[in-house]
Image 1 (cartoon, rainbow, N blue to C red):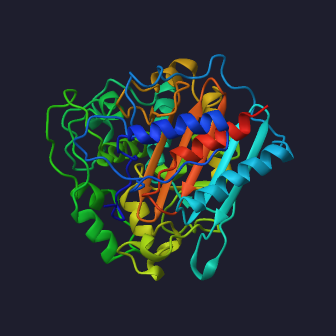
Image 2: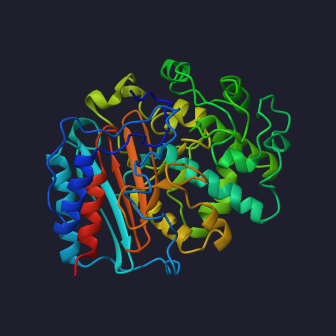
Length: 412
């Protein structure tokens, strides 16, 4: 079950039937997949030491960055015939049970974005410009920000994380910055009480001290065990604030967003209203929230959820902006080649903000969900493509849609 605070990667192993369906989709580019008995877009238990996108080394080639790196961000649109095929993929996702689907695709041939379905109350149609709570994809930005600061000599990756906590009273378990980036700090994920706190006051702006007070005690010595942990990445966000003298939101904008004109990507904080239009869940997808709570404080899914998950699940973006920023990342525009190569994950591990993807092609990416929001971004190094898919249903399996989009975009 996903709670309002649960800003995590999508953690379930994919079933063999789904993988077979993906093979069929690749062969047919935009062929349809029959829905499984119980489609999922769910979270793995925190103790599960596997990649959230679900494939080990026996079923997927080694993940990699593109060689040579991606070129400049394309400025032209994908041709009309491919655009029509891509839109049909989204319409098919509605048949498979998605309430809405918002997507963006970038290849060396151009860019495309589209939407289908209902993306808000009163039958409002989803649009390609909709802002979306990208949940744990935030961790990718946090990892890149830390690595960029390390390149500048402002953070030492092998220094104790405690070096960068300032006056904040928090147990960093003796972990180094690098161990935190690798999810090996020995710190567990959030407890279930966090969801209760967010539901109780959706408009609340959480402070660092209040966030840290809710962290669970360490479960193992640092460096010994992998465990997916949102608090670990929040500690990295606190470290960013300590070394830059800025809020995490301001440092993110200065270092990673403004230089690449990513004006519609933002860490959501008090006093800043997330740009509209908004994609909003409806019906049962609102979970424990009242419908009026969604957007409370001017943030998605609400200010309480965004500020409580600073650096781990706090960012909102539209699909085209996220795809463009990821293109810049893998084009080598943001990090030096050595830093970017460091981010490539080994099988079954989320580390440095990225994870293995189940699509073959050495694909890697990031994903996340929180109540009413499921998001995934994937980089395909051989196809030299970025695919983003958003759905206002965190249980919906996006893998078939992602592969169909890739197939349609790559068709000759």
